[in-house]
Length: 602
Image 1 (tube, rainbow, N blue to C red):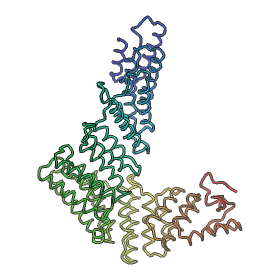
Image 2 (image 1 turned 30 degrees about the horizontal axis):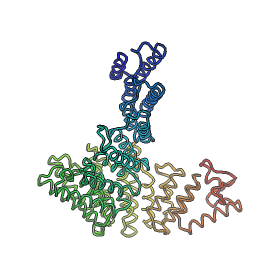
Image 3 (image 1 turned 45 degrees about the vertical axis):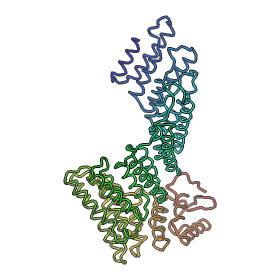
Image 4 (image 1 turned 90 degrees about the horizontal axis):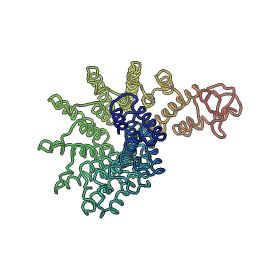
């Protein structure tokens, strides 16, 4: 006991290297016990091992702490299996510590949830039939899978399987008097809903909603009275649909709205724990915003109006805050409703919301202060409007206001690269005759220059999409030197030109200029010429070029490659002294790939 007390004091002292020192003391105790077995005072027992486990978990943590704790658990398992000595018999605390350690590693360390699951199964399969996992341990493993589901495609299904295993155990032990029998509660089910909500699997939202309504059924039937879903359960299911709205907009937004309507009905008939709160309403607004449906702006504003009305009538926890207004602005910006885009009404309404937020913030309501997401949404609304130069100029005016606010000390409205790129997009999409388009191209490139100036100050770096957007603006301008402009932008700007960059440029041009025409071909050919000159042509670059080029342009390039390979006369762009096999039956001048490794030379 004295050794255990000393170990406990060391672990709780905060002393540096406490875990390793505790491990050293444990090993000394083991060695002395094996040599002098009559001195029971130095015999390590289960408490000794769990104390050292805690030292590793609490003072070192992470993967190393979990691994060391697991090694100690394995050690006492072997000792107990070998000797049958109850003094070193693993107990619930031993397994609890190690599973908790791996839970804390999720999702930073891949495989941690599986380790927790393995330890749970090991515990249930142990020789000691009396030692079985309790609800707390099952819940920790469930939580580990839920936290992993964003990065592990199998995690949500494994969480659901574990939940159903708990259900089965609960039914099997229903008549038992064991105080540690497994009975899942509403937290268990809500954790599983959360696992599906974070999952990227196509059926994730459907599974989340199915578990939600399973909770309702189990509660109403009396099988599991403690699984009645609460506001968190419903809101998490709504969030699952919100996350899928970009991929399945119509269904997802309507399902999110249906769950919200169901909550309101349940509350109206007496279920006080399901009253929607600000997070519930805002998550539903986000589902509509991401869906980009024609009615999404209307639905978002309807929910906002309801929240404001409820708040004014004294209903708690429904006050719209900054994140709610931002969600509505996002819906206004992304709605495909004809009237919103043609008249710029969505953008104008988003500015009215900003004015109201500023008014209320000035009156002392700190929780409605506009932030970078507020302004970013309004800029996107103007960029997506069909207001041409007017929309682009308004987007730029708002950006300049953000810059002024940031320079005045408002750090939470600092413009980011996405915002600058959105303003560039607004100018690139502006169309009002050739003169107007040339002016738009000049303004788009001026915006790129501002980004580069900020990059020199280590503040902001333009990405590939920014450069491609300016190329698009020049392509639409009617300027006869489209290719020259594209090449100038690539050569003179702060962009690392490698094979990956060129692939990204082709993809960006394809996305920004979906219609195959002469202007797009000029940009695509200019990019390919520059890629050849830089010696960065790879098979992947050629594939990206093929997707972006018109059939006519691609055939022209293939003919030049074929002529060059057959007669050795050299490319019309580059003279060469050899060829490179880029894919089967296709060779290119060696210089085109001279700065790329792992290309076979012939």
